[in-house]
Image 1 (cartoon, helix red, strand yellow):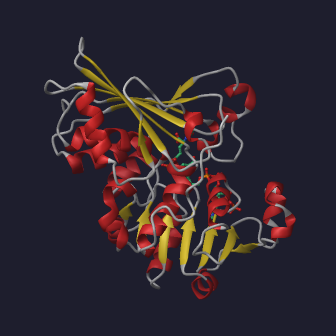
Image 2: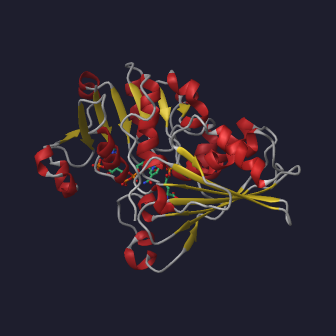
Length: 345
Ligand SMILES: NC(=O)C1=CN([C@@H]2O[C@H](COP(=O)(O)OP(=O)(O)OC[C@H]3O[C@@H](n4cnc5c(N)ncnc54)[C@H](OP(=O)(O)O)[C@@H]3O)[C@@H](O)[C@H]2O)C=CC1
Ligand SMILES: CC(=O)N[C@@H](CCC(=O)OP(=O)(O)O)C(=O)O
């Protein structure tokens, strides 16, 4: 199968290439750029090596349709909403790593992203790719909207609690931290070394674009769920997200019962690993891999559950989950090309 990657000169795009070049069902990856037509991808990323000979091509829809079967977008907001419909209308399969197709209500997208997105019919057609909880719909998807990095960690951590109505609907608080690669490769004031090093910064307080994405999924699972408190922090590391989630239990629960529930919920999900009682994951334990590791505690004094969920933002939070969804869409083993162990230390 031939694959197109649009946005290959960015972090999400180059991570897609890292996995897809070794994928058992992919023969060729073609890489596209809006700014570097004809250049070697190795000029942007010398680590891939010039011998790979990957030349960046101009984004030409007709050329892509005639060469490739599946198109991945790893582009900033506003790009896929413009280009993906042209591919969809010609029967192509599209997997979008951006937020353009994640929110079903255009007015909600416009409020949080402060820009326009695609026509409603494409938003309704898009299938949300939180793989572990939407496999049936993903199998028949033509337009796959890959979840955001923070929503992936948060929703995988919350799903068993919310789906089983175990927590008070208005009690969910998420404290999340991310490495700097989550902001992409382009330099900015907020992400340059001396701003980030030896520093922890909270950002987009009560205004993060992932809040409506998380709430959309939670209310699909339980319509009574109330708005959540969700805070994001930038921390001095390259990759990784930790979402620490707090919620008040509705009924008497125990940590043993919660661990059993999580293990059962994810028993058929290779990429979600539940820690033993008293053990909690750290971001390095999933670095470079498609795993989401989860630890759980219950405080009998407060009646609150704490869930700790970690992922690599560029893998399970972006390229890895996109390929997991690609595998499901194509009817292959969900883990194809993805069973790399985390890099440790
Ligand atoms: N980084 C992360 O951890 C995650 C990112 N995402 C999402 O994935 C997408 C890509 O993110 P990331 O790789 O980090 O971003 P980067 O900024 O690293 O890369 C984005 C790439 O998009 C291309 N691009 C820019 N403008 C245009 C345009 N007008 N038309 C076509 N291509 C364009 C650029 O390549 P060129 O100039 O060569 O065209 C650029 O290299 C974003 O929407 C992001 O929100 C989702 C989850 C996690
Ligand atoms: C560290 C950092 O800046 N992270 C980004 C995550 C970007 C992302 O995944 O946003 P999309 O919803 O557009 O895909 C942020 O917080 O906005």
